[in-house]
Length: 572
Image (cartoon, rainbow, N blue to C red; front, side, top):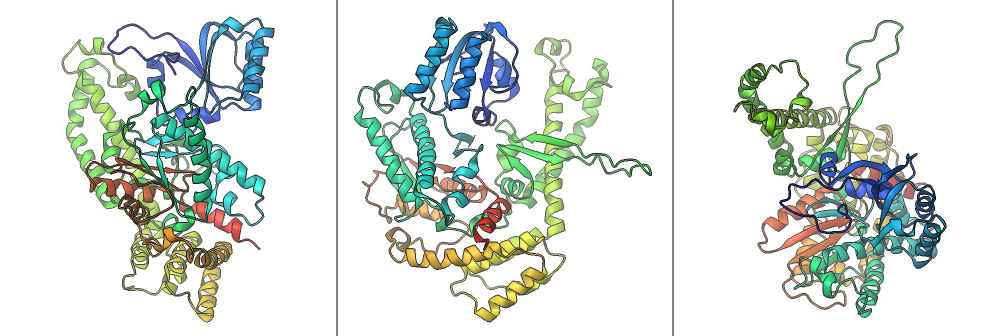
């Protein structure tokens, strides 16, 4: 797409064609986890601008647009054509554009005498966000429209549910078009997952029947990596496991998502600008916000994102010690080059030509990049450790593990809830909800009242509990008639719940009225998700040679965001 919808030429020294990239918020979310500013520049993108920002004309440069085909966006594109902003226009729509909107663009181009400048119009079918090689989410902008709260609120109308289903199905359809494969779909009966599965099946079958325009036949299949074998798509409703999203976790990536501000592979942190006391009468200094991108290019991140946090802390220290041993070498190299006082960011951009001045120079940018990554993970890991220590998250993690695996408890639940030094009110509510969800027998009314009093005394809002009580009652009724749940899934409220569900589907112990896959190479699981489930699936895949598992979810929430949704649902 960034090469004007033509395959990029490999192993060429020719400069790319310079161009501008115009995207909306949806397009920005899709691109930002995949490509850095430097990578965009290498592809010839000199400017990347939001569609609805104030943009000056650049009449001698082509523009690549990457936007959703909304009424508002189409109007702005038509305005750009009238204002003759660019030399030529390559219009790429994230989802398929309707014929009527296409006609609106054609009319505007005709009126602006710019028909020849609209060079290409493409439906890209990219309405999903890829966070990892094996993980995707359906959306980040407007995610509240397809959230757990939106689907499960008591006053939802049929028209609202249809709109939610259409949004989810459009994204899933785009995912399978990009994958180049028609899946075998499996899901539990009688909930939102089945509704999505049915609509998705209709959409896929409709496209397959249109032989001339099918996206899964002929030349279009060339993009598919798994066209020789249909992948198994396991579609799950969040209600099948409510404990895991509330669980205090212990792996690096999941912890960052739980306790820090982490979205689309970028973590935002406050820097300690307010550490020094302000002079008397002066305003306190504002804390600055710093962002860190955790990407595939970061080898430490790739190696340790799924590791238990103590291992990560140890590895950060080892990397730091190794670098300190090389620090004298860095100082020596700077001295040779006369760069003692230079900014490290500028030094890291040294070109290969400069490096030829001395054999020592070539290792300097590499050492400085290593130091940047060590500093990054030292800052992030320190921030995570502060949360662990101040909230006693290790105590919560161990206790919840025992609750979820039905192990013997060494401490009273009431003691933890009543301990003023153990965690925030939200931590205490998360722990109690996991106890309530996983308990094979609900606590007696008198015990429940005692727990509720302790929670209120600890400053907890009981709204989430109100909803979970309704959910547990309703799920008991529903599970009685659900073959999917009855066959091995009902009691799997463990940390590896989703992995076991996928395993059952592979072994064909779950049924939902679809044909059985023949040794599926590729399995998809999809639900309102979290990094705990993603990591469990990554670990599961390592034990299954020849299997590739991709984890997807409608929205990616941490426990605080999930609690907030439960609270909204439970308010009386």
